[in-house]
Image (cartoon, rainbow, N blue to C red; front, side, top):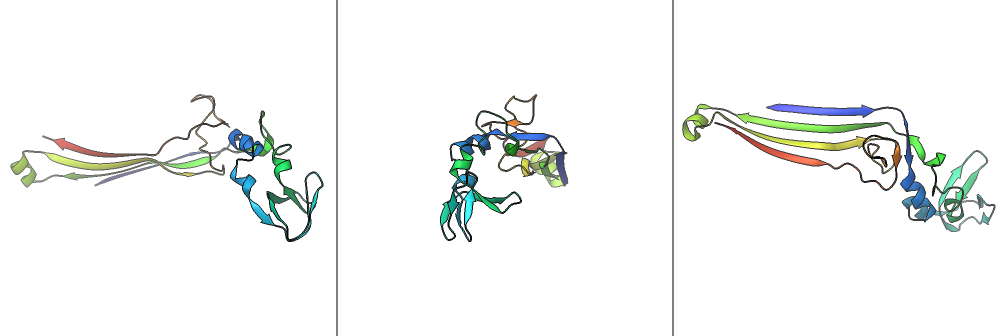
Length: 172
């Protein structure tokens, strides 16, 4: 019986989530559709006041002077990331990944040799890119807009894939 487990980690560096910025601009990110019932009167970033008890779309944040509503007017202007790399979409690019797990079992025995004329049979299973831990939301930090040589900029890129492999190794 053999078990192989490979963890891989990368710590530090900045990562730009440009896709999230663009989706904020067009109101298509999940954060934009958040609905909040206000428990107190709140102003949006532009100064428009919303009454307590009102149902609004957006997010409440507190930058130190009380809650502020980040609504559509925020996401399509200052909160937008369309056309540039903005600080609010740049975060810690650290990650830890369960890169690979392999398990195999080798069958040997006199009956295998006498009945099937085989030395051994090994059955195996492997999984790759099984788990990812990262502070980034919804992005695989190993993706890159520039291809394999540059890291840190994501813009509608596809993440790496999980894969599963099953093997049978027959030795005569």
